[in-house]
Each structure stands twice: as structure tokens, then as C-alpha cells.
View (cartoon, rainbow, N blue to C red):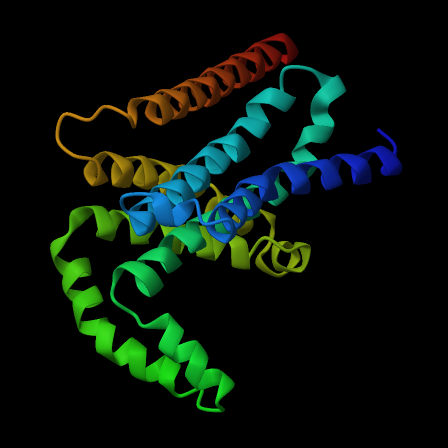
Length: 233
């Protein structure tokens, strides 16, 4: 595929992955968000859902490109898709910190305009005890934060210079943790919803399929390697 085609595809992927964020901003701007029974809860679920959808999409890139050499170019977009997952996961976390926890963001912004940026720290000190208490008591927050920390590590080490600095094998070992992050995100989803709600089964099923595809590919690869060794013996 030509460099021009790759650039066009990247631009389209950016537009597609930014679309949910643009939609949310417009939903807030036109006042429709305020009409929801619980606007903060809506934002929380919206950002969390898209973080998980895009994370699963990033995992799907590798098995898809293995289907045919003609679509091997898809691997070029895996990092980009993964970074967008981290973006929405960070919005999900920020929603909890700045909207759900009681952090007075409007006061902090007004103080910033007035030349008092320290108010951001003051507000953080006010809500931190409650956040820490939630982190200690609520399992779904613990596992969700664990998933986000893994995505943070992957995002920080995604640039090419980090790959060179870490070495290929170490970089690969770290980035395989994306599967752990996805499992943790699915568990976070299951523990977040009310008892009896089965909504997370769809993302869990997709994850199971992706795991199965990886296991099948690994088994087939080992079988080919064994056959090759037997033929050369």
C-alpha cells in the first residue's frame, strides 16, 4: 500500500475514533445531556464503553491481518487505535475524579482565570479522602484503575524510541499486558453493573473469540514448526 493511502486511512481512523468524543461534546453543548436523569452516569458509561470497544478493536487488528497478506498493512494502525482506547479510558477516569467525586471543577476554573491555580490542588485535597476510600472498598474501581495503569504504561512506551530503548523482546513482553488490561476492563464492567444485568456479555464474548483466535494461531504455528523440523531431520 502506498504512503499516500496509509495517510488517508490514518486520517479516516482518526475521524472515526474521535467521532464519539465529538458526539459527547455536542450532546453537552446543545443541552441534551442535561435532560438525562443522571448526566454524570451517562458520561461515565459512554466513555467507559468506548474505551472497551476501541481496546477490543486494537486487539482484533492482529488476527485480522493474519487472514491475508493483502491486509497485513492493518498492523500499522494498531498503536493508533490502542492510544485512542487509552484516551477514552482516561476520560472515563477523569469523569469519576472531576464530576462524580465532588471535585468543584467550576470553582477551580474560575480561580485559574483569576490567577489562583492553587485551587486545583485545594479541590483535590478535599476529594482525595473520598476517592481513596472508594479505591479501598469498591472492587470495580480497583480493577478498573488497574486496567488504566496498564494502558498508561503501554501508552507511555508506544513511541518508536521507547521500543528501541527497551529492546524488542522487553517491549513485546510489556505490551502483551494489553490482554490483562482488557480482561480487567471486562471484569470492571461486570462488577459495575447491577446484579442480574447481562450487558457486559457481548464484550466478554468478543474478548473470548479474540483469545481463541490467538490460541489457534499459536497452536498452528507450533505445528508448522514441528513439521518443518521433522522434514529437515
